[in-house]
Amino acid sequence: MKVQVLTTPGCSNCIVLEKILDQLGIIYDLIDVTEKPEYLEKYPIFTAPGLVIDGKLEFTGIPKKDDLKKKFS
Image (cartoon, rainbow, N blue to C red; front, top):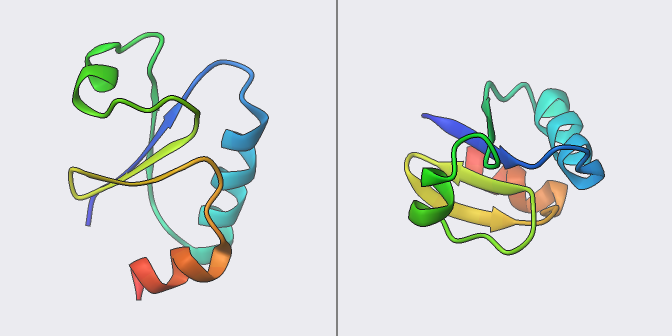
C-alpha cells in the first residue's frame, strides 16, 4: 500500500494528520505541493492536507481517526 500526504509549508493540519498516521503505524511519503505542482494537477485539493492511498485521493483536511483505521484495516 502506497500512502502519500500532500502538504503545504507551515500547514498545521498536515502535522496533525502526520501524528495520527504515526500513531497508527502507517508509513507514508510527504509531498510538498508547492515544490511539486504536478500533484495538484493530478489531485486537485483545495485544502491541505490531502491523503492519497494507492493513487486515489481518499481524504482532504483531517479525517477522523476511526475513518483512517477503516481504510487501513
